[in-house]
Structures are given as C-alpha cells and as structure tokens.
Length: 166
Image (cartoon, rainbow, N blue to C red; front, side, top):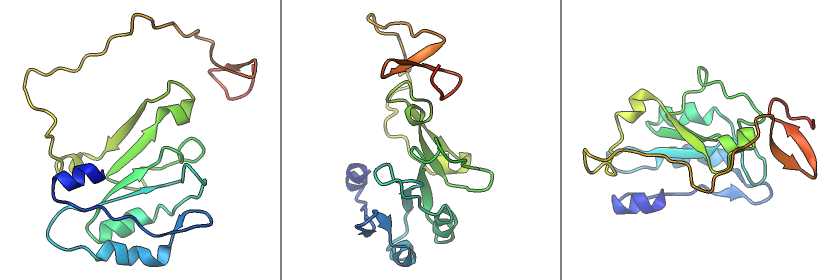
C-alpha cells in the first residue's frame, strides 16, 4: 500500500503500538482519524486479529472511522477461521480473507470482498487494454488431490469434512 500511495503523492501512517502485545493504543485512535489534511479519500486498514500475537482489535473501529469519513479495509484473514464476522452488523468497505487460513488448503488463495458503493470510488489503472482476458490453466505437473483427504499431519489423515483426525 505504501508504494502505491507514494506513486499517487499520498502518504501512509502507521499507528503506535504497545510493545507487549502489539495492540494499538485506542486512546490515540481518534487523533489518527482526525489529523488528515486536504480533500481526498482516506483508507483505515486494520487487522480484526493480529496474525502474530492473536490480539483482537475492536470491530467498533469500523464505525468510528466511517464517522470521520474514512473508508475501511478490515484484514479478517486471522479472525474468521475462529470467529464469526457478521457483515450485516459490521460494514467495512473492504474485507481481506485467506482461504488457506479458513480451510487449510490451497495455500496462497484468498479474496477481497468489497461493498458495491466502495467499488465506485476505486480507479482501475491496471486495466490497460480491452483485449485483456484472464486465463487459468492447470500446470502440467499438477497432481490430483484425493476427495476424502487433502492434508496429512504427522502421519494422521484429516477428513475434509471435519477438523478431527480420521
């Protein structure tokens, strides 16, 4: 994000974190959300749960940021595998998810959920030609994953339908 912001003459600011558990100092959050100059879009990105320490940040920050005119990117990759995220109650503009962390397979696959009204505020500089079409093909060396078991851990088979050893 910082490299994209710099190409557009934008800036990125990181919040101060308390060292013991890497928790953001909530007393400073209103200051971060109000100390913004100029007329431009602002994006407040935060993890619902730290991937490093497991600390969970309050989802109320979404509404707090919206009240100050910020768009919100919620990194829910570490949060959703063990917690329920009710998007009918919480309304971040964007949500990043990791399917690997949710299902344990395939690695490196995730998604970015976006509200329709948030999409209208985005520019798409990477679409340069009308003839560009996405294409996906299996690699020649790809192997087929068995239907009943897709992961092995210490010699035990894990069922795809449950998280308990088979």
